[in-house]
Image 1 (tube, protein in one colour):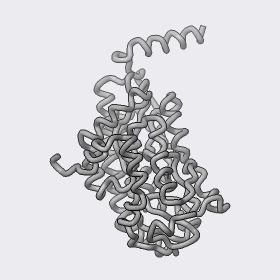
Image 2: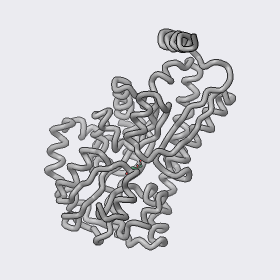
Image 3: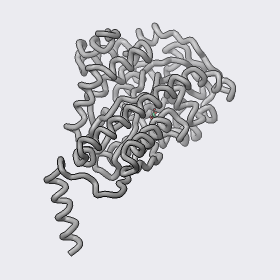
Image 4: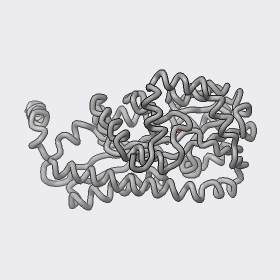
Length: 326
Ligand code: EAX
């Protein structure tokens, strides 16, 4: 009897999405991200939680959990075993290939450029690609400009990268870039990174200052070079079935909470960018603040040609040439 009832309810929920709203009482949803609570993702997740619970008068409760295998968390959000994930775009390209264009090295001039593109027409167009892949891109968040760390040597030019075994995210754009520089890119989930560095499976990795600081990567990495070779967006993704079942008023609550998450997250990135390098030097890292960016860009020319083939030169130039008000 209970099975029949459950099937009937599931059927009703499926055919009456617009009208279906969670029963009175509390609905608990789960959001995961890969980093510690005090990180730029953690503060964003907390802002999301607080906003949802405040605006819904606690009809919805958000449980925040850590999962540092981002691909796994995106899959869980897709199938509905969790409702939300905050993730870097690293693995997202395996689900929504159009987002890979954002991972091209040296595409964005600075944070204002990246935030402007993602908050504008281009960012909206990319989020619109998520539903066809069984995901809802609620908002662009931020991971930050990625920098190279390693245990073998100071890096200031492409020659210094040659031969380094570098952990990359499971991202074909990043892997091509490091292959082109003569490194040995080794893709793996963030959850495998620290053991790989401890065991010497890889010599180095690349991540934004906020990630390096939040995860104490100074404990397993000696040299930091401020290459800023890639801007790494993050994205808040939701489960379509859950979101489509919400009333318009409740959906507006989650949209408002996503905006609050973006503000808290980006403020923390800005703060970490201001203080993180000095903190990492204090913790004992050898920091190379200036690198030969022009030489890196020149060395990546073959990769840029491949990216233009893959994404279209016009699309890349549209992003690269974006200006405020454009
Ligand atoms: O999203 O995997 C990575 O290097 C990411 O930057 C990290 O998980 C934060």
